[in-house]
Length: 255
Ligand code: G
Ligand code: G
Ligand code: MN
Ligand code: NA
Image (cartoon, rainbow, N blue to C red):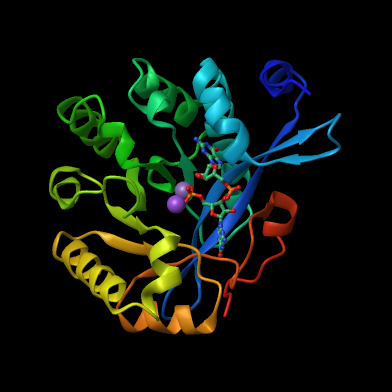
């Protein structure tokens, strides 16, 4: 199978689907938002191909641009509809590849999607990783500031992996930091990791940022992160990423 070739046809043939994973309040377990995670139902392979496999490929071929726009539009359209039937609206976070984020025209895409789907900008969040800064910091900060004036928020994803630097926390106008799950795995058993996690949480709070812990799989991890005043938790313990139809059936609290 030639994934590179198949990826091209996949968009036209509607082979992608958005799954949603809840993020919950660390104290109450109430659902606070969802993260959109794309899935590819590959017809020949007869199974789903992980975005961990095809997103990097799409980045290499440039197909991340049309695919990323489709994901953004689809997630916003679906969540606008989803929220129309709910008492309390849920924000949706969409992962944006660095290539997509720093590309000329991204801001126009966001504006267009907001207009077309009618989703309130406050209900859209964009997740980017620190790799957006590879080509320079100033234009990225400017873009984030513009998004902020639109009402769209930005979260710093996978924080703590790669070449994370504390200066990113200082410089970037993000409203949320997502602690990578590699930290969550070790917080309970490694005092140094615990110290870093506690430090990031405390610093982020001083900068009025919300802290999310990803990859919560056990009660022990949940309790540990809640005790450290992490605001929001996400992980298989609460719910796996799921199709929209299943999201609609979830209760408001995921204890
Ligand atoms: O959902 P899963 O854990 O399989 O995702 C694997 C990787 O793919 C993660 O790094 C995730 O951020 C990324 N990913 C999932 N959905 C999207 C998406 O819609 N856009 C981008 N750019 N990355 C995504
Ligand atoms: O890079 P990003 O943080 O966007 O990727 C999120 C990825 O983490 C998705 O592929 C999602 O399926 C996965 N994920 C979500 N919760 C858990 C969890 O509790 N454990 C593990 N191992 N992966 C998780
Ligand atoms: Mn993410
Ligand atoms: Na992450």
